Length: 395
Ligand SMILES: Cc1cc2nc3c(=O)[nH]c(=O)nc-3n(C[C@H](O)[C@H](O)[C@H](O)COP(=O)(O)OP(=O)(O)OC[C@H]3O[C@@H](n4cnc5c(N)ncnc54)[C@H](O)[C@@H]3O)c2cc1C
Image (cartoon, rainbow, N blue to C red):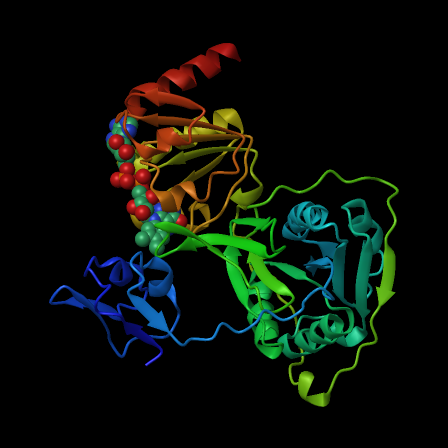
């Protein structure tokens, strides 16, 4: 048994049982007992205030990782252009690189992408690692994994960031497994631990009810994906130059099992609210499709996109592509108007990047007001028509 109880010190206070994430500690007859669910994580040892727990768990020493340097951003492209999320990650990556005192680097994998190096330099890249090969023209999991794994092994970066796009969600886990790394998906915040230099990767956990900060002290690179729209893109600096480092592409036949026969873009889903500058969003408080009609009128008057909560989607008042939040889209508009939305944490997670939040709710204690710049306590069906009338008059 790697953890045991020193009975004379144990008060049966239950701190260890509370701290154990696996439910492996139980209190019986005012004494703690370790059950066979124990994974030897050590959480109970840190929690006990009475020196009532002992252990022979040996902490593995942290390897010397000082040779790993640089914050890498996987620059995802589509039809030869950078995706907005790649720009957003360059902004965040630049901030992290500055904190670490290391270089921000971009990684381009594809065919004919060298012209994008200048754009990446203007977004802050000091180096651009380029794998250019006609066999990489279309995304294929195994081929991209091979190329990125080779690049990482050759250049040993400290951090690798990717967009949580369909491609990123496919490639990042495959790569992390190939190199035996960790991966934190869908981060909403990134930072650097000042003492250790570890990347702090924050994301919603347990159904969005807590924000968990995860770090990876024993392996490099530290890998994280970030959903589009969460981070702000940097100001481009015209004329900046980056060193372009070309990677020799070595692919095995077994990496080329997938052949792209044709490419048919999905029929347009109509909207991409992640890029909207003004959003009028509604929740259960709008009551019906007709209620959303009123919001649509306001949105049209303001040149805004219409959006809503998960409840509004489930009720069929708006399409799923317009859902904002943890399981919907993350938005960063200049102005976000929340109408009849309570502001549950899962919804708030998607709107925190908004510049101004205006909330209309008849409940003065609604959580949405905790993040609102302007709080209007009132009935949506009175406030929105008044806004419409004022807008029309102003026009
Ligand atoms: C794992 C998980 C993921 C989730 N992901 C998301 C997500 O991505 N996005 C999301 O939105 N939700 C998500 N949810 C659901 C979330 O928890 C909430 O249930 C949801 O956001 C609530 O939507 P709402 O604000 O429309 O409804 P409610 O919480 O019911 O709030 C309605 C609000 O309207 C107000 N109101 C009522 N009538 C009026 C009126 N006439 N005038 C003014 N105000 C009025 C009420 O005071 C209330 O505050 C998720 C939940 C889970 C568990």
